[in-house]
Amino acid sequence: MFNQVGDLGERYPELLADGEGGKIALHALAGGLAAEATGGDFRTGAAAAGAKVSAKLAMPWVRARRWR
Image (cartoon, rainbow, N blue to C red; front, side, top):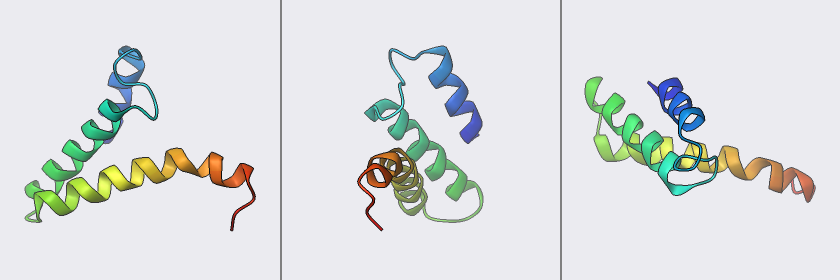
Protein backbone atom coordinates (compact mmCIF):
# COMPACT_ATOMS: atom_id res chain seq x y z
CA MET A 1 0.00 0.00 0.00
CA PHE A 2 2.79 2.44 0.87
CA ASN A 3 4.57 1.75 -2.41
CA GLN A 4 1.39 2.70 -4.23
CA VAL A 5 1.43 6.06 -2.45
CA GLY A 6 4.98 6.56 -3.73
CA ASP A 7 3.84 5.59 -7.21
CA LEU A 8 1.12 8.22 -7.03
CA GLY A 9 3.78 10.77 -6.09
CA GLU A 10 5.72 9.95 -9.23
CA ARG A 11 2.57 10.14 -11.33
CA TYR A 12 1.38 13.46 -9.87
CA PRO A 13 4.54 15.29 -8.72
CA GLU A 14 2.83 18.68 -8.67
CA LEU A 15 0.42 17.43 -6.01
CA LEU A 16 2.44 14.83 -4.14
CA ALA A 17 6.05 15.97 -4.17
CA ASP A 18 8.44 14.73 -1.49
CA GLY A 19 8.13 16.84 1.61
CA GLU A 20 4.72 18.19 0.69
CA GLY A 21 1.78 17.79 3.01
CA GLY A 22 -0.26 15.80 0.52
CA LYS A 23 2.24 12.95 0.32
CA ILE A 24 2.69 12.86 4.08
CA ALA A 25 -1.10 12.85 4.54
CA LEU A 26 -1.52 9.95 2.10
CA HIS A 27 1.11 7.93 3.93
CA ALA A 28 -0.64 8.71 7.21
CA LEU A 29 -3.96 7.59 5.73
CA ALA A 30 -2.37 4.36 4.48
CA GLY A 31 -0.85 3.76 7.93
CA GLY A 32 -4.18 4.29 9.62
CA LEU A 33 -5.97 1.95 7.23
CA ALA A 34 -3.28 -0.71 7.64
CA ALA A 35 -3.57 -0.46 11.41
CA GLU A 36 -7.36 -0.80 11.25
CA ALA A 37 -7.09 -3.79 8.92
CA THR A 38 -4.84 -5.59 11.39
CA GLY A 39 -6.97 -4.79 14.44
CA GLY A 40 -5.01 -1.76 15.61
CA ASP A 41 -5.93 1.84 16.25
CA PHE A 42 -6.33 4.07 13.18
CA ARG A 43 -4.93 7.17 14.91
CA THR A 44 -1.81 5.38 16.10
CA GLY A 45 -1.11 3.91 12.67
CA ALA A 46 -1.68 7.24 10.97
CA ALA A 47 0.56 9.10 13.39
CA ALA A 48 3.34 6.53 13.10
CA ALA A 49 3.28 6.50 9.29
CA GLY A 50 3.17 10.29 9.03
CA ALA A 51 6.01 10.67 11.53
CA LYS A 52 8.11 8.08 9.70
CA VAL A 53 7.79 9.88 6.36
CA SER A 54 8.52 13.24 7.98
CA ALA A 55 11.60 11.88 9.75
CA LYS A 56 12.85 10.26 6.54
CA LEU A 57 12.57 13.59 4.73
CA ALA A 58 14.40 15.40 7.54
CA MET A 59 17.40 13.03 7.66
CA PRO A 60 19.44 14.63 4.83
CA TRP A 61 19.02 18.01 6.51
CA VAL A 62 20.16 16.59 9.85
CA ARG A 63 23.11 14.74 8.32
CA ALA A 64 24.25 17.85 6.45
CA ARG A 65 24.61 19.61 9.80
CA ARG A 66 26.38 16.60 11.33
CA TRP A 67 23.92 16.35 14.20
CA ARG A 68 24.10 13.04 15.98
